[in-house]
Amino acid sequence: MMDVTDDRHELKPEVNLDDSQDTDEPAFEWMRTSTASTPAAHRADGERGASEEPGSGHDRPESSREAKAPEAANGAPEPVSAASTPGLREQSPTSALQVRPPEDEVRRRTEQREAAAKAKPVAPRVLQVLMAIFLPFLLLIGAVRAVATPAFLWLEYFRPGFPGDGYGFSVDDRLTYGSYALDYLANFAGRRYLGDLQLPTGSPLFTDGEVGHMADVKFVFLTAYAAGAVLLAFFVVVYFVLRKRRGAFGRGLFAGAIVTFVLVLGLAVFAIMGWQTFFTDFHRLFFANGTWTFQLSDTLIRLFPAQFWMDSAIVIGVLVLVVSSLTIIFAWPTKRKSEASDAELAAADDQE
Image 1: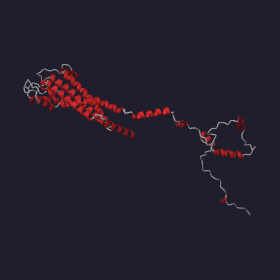
Image 2: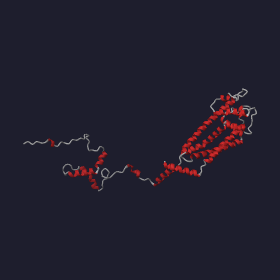
Image 3: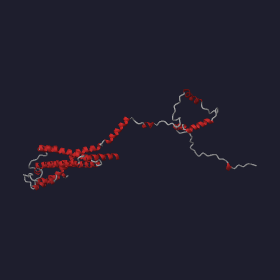
Image 4: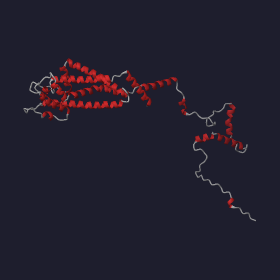
C-alpha cells in the first residue's frame, strides 16, 4: 500500500524578507573595535574557544602564542587600552576644562568681573558732557529770541529814560517801523520786505546798506534759531535715553548750568569793563567790516540806538543767569539723590 504524504504538513523553507543584503560587519573601524571590546564579544570568543577541540585545525595561530611570550618572559603587563578592556573609558579631550585653575588666576578673574560690574557705562557720561557744552548755547539762543520781539520793543520805547529820536520819529513811528525790522528777522521774506517801505514823504525808509545789513542779521538769526531747534531736540532725545537712570539727566543739566553761569558772568565782566569794545568785537565776529556802521541820521540808528543794545544785552544776560541759577538749584546732586540713583542702577543691573 502506497504512503501518501500530505503536502499541507510539509515544512516550507523560511523566506528572508530583508533584501538589503547587509552583513553583521560594523560600518566603521571604531565600531568594529568597540564591538570587539564589549563583554558579549568576549563571551562569544570564550565560548567559541571552548567548543573547539585541540588539533581540530582551529587552534590559535602560532604568532598569537608567540605574542604572549614577551609578557610571560619579562613579567611586566602590557599596556591596557580602553578598546581592549571592558568598562574602561579613555579620558575625554574636554576633561581638561574641568581642572580648576590656580587660585591666583581665580582671584584675578573675580576681580575683573567685579570691576566690570561696578564700572559705569560710557554712553551716559558722553551725553552728560555734551549737555554741559550745548546748554549755554541753547539758553543764549532762547534769550535772544525772547528779546527780538515787538513786546520787548514796546517796553523799551515806553520805559522812562529811553532816549527819543532827534530827527522826528514819534514813539508810534518807532514802534511801527521797528516792528517791521524785527518781523523781517523771523520770517522768510526777501529784501523787498524792508526795501519797499517808504516814509510819508515818499523816500525809502531804509537805505540799500541798511537792507543789506538786515539781510546779514537775518541769516545769523535764522541759523541760530535752527541750531536752537536742533539743540532742543537733542535734549529731548537725551531725556528719553537717560530717564531710566535716575539723576543722570539732572546731573547733565547741573553741569551745563554751571558752565553757562560762569560763561555769562565772564561776558558780563568783559562788557562792563568796555562796552564799546565788546559791541565792536561782537559785530566783527559775525559781520564783515564796513557793513554794520551807519550815520546817526540813518533809520536803523534812530530805531535802535546804543541804549537799546545795552538794555538788550542786560536782559539777555539776566534771563540766562536766572534760568541757569534755577537749574542749578533744582538739579543740585544731593546725597539722597545720589543714593537713590545708585540703588536704582544696582536694581537695573540685577534685572539685566
